[in-house]
Image (cartoon, rainbow, N blue to C red; front, side, top):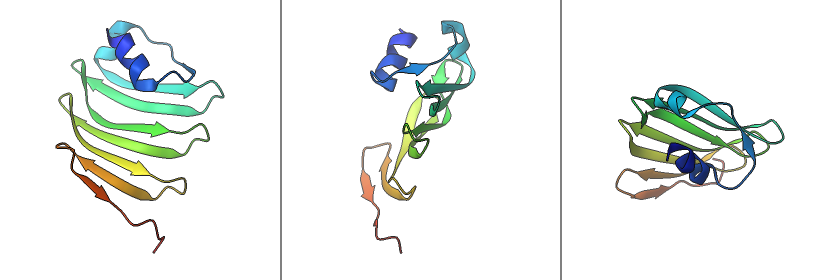
Length: 103
């Protein structure tokens, strides 16, 4: 089930990782695109999503962060191609858009 969840989470893009089901219970994990660039950094604690999950594009740029506590998503932060924060979504789904003017 956890492998299916990660597959759905990571999408159908190629990525590589070397971990078994039991290793997902605790600790930090990294997943990579086929070109070697980091795709996702995440953490589990007691088999639950925990801490900050960071998502990157194939160029290695941070595109999204998610903050988890005890398996529950608390915040999502989206970034543009220049690394600027453009959108925040809270745990209730309320979205705050940020100006992309660069000021």
